[in-house]
Length: 416
Image 1 (tube, rainbow, N blue to C red):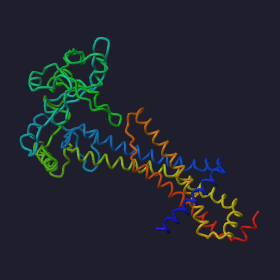
Image 2: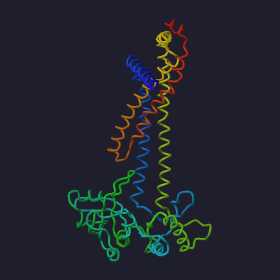
Image 3: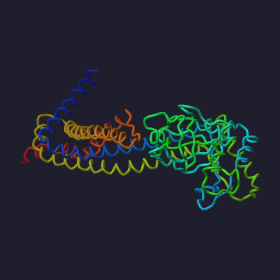
Image 4: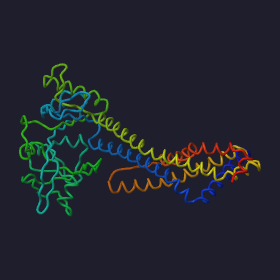
């Protein structure tokens, strides 16, 4: 116990000597810490932005709904991305077949999507209209915070009713509740029957900038582009009871649709089936690569800062050669001299790292407010930043410290 206390006291003395030396050359110390400070600031901010991208992707996937498959009439090109020049076909009858024949399906929500112009007296907005059925709410976790959602009678009668998102409501009815109001969508009058529950924004995509109308109404009154058939759809959401049924259901959907469209063996599917699990994994890999690239670029600043520390410590050893010789003459061991300069380099880097961390936290907070993009900096990241700064000091301060400890006491005392 006494040995431990003596060792701690010795390191405490080294820290005190290091702080005194840094104060003696205050301006040089400040300039030296800039490299480490900028490096830590860059790395921490890169990590925060990468973590924020992963959080945003997770939130974006969550807004789609869990345990869901998405079927689009886009030819599946295998391992590569879908070919944008080709388009397959998907109908409401395909959705009915999936609901009947695929096991574990809880709901099927066929949709048509189209950009529309909405007008009220004195105000207008352009947004995306989703033509859907009541099942869309269940599959996508979409509910009405005011009023009601679509009903089956609305779809059956092609009623001119709409449920609007919060962003659209703020544009058209900033001071009043939109429920019960009349709007014109592409010059066709509609009654607002509900306000969608807010889902916020992710990766620059405003999930509340939309309206939902009956699929029959959109097809008959609002669709501006011709389709191949009277019940063609843009995509189909397929909700499953659990994750296990989702994994098997994806293959069943592919087999069913291949049979319905008589796709020969070896030919690509005229449709694409993706699950929310696959989307989350793919986007997670992309954000991890993005984060790794950002950190790698930012780490160059740390390397430059470390080289600066080594340079300044070599200068310090040269300037304090007589001090080193005097300490050795009074009985200091080589390890004491080495530890003194190691601690000085580490303290210099920790101070720079702490300032860089503080600036990164401030910048992340400003970034979150201005860009509405999460940039979380956890306690583990903060501890890692300070610890890594100390390691930078020990690594790049190692050579100057060893050089100082190897000086000859006699030669050191003779130096001018």
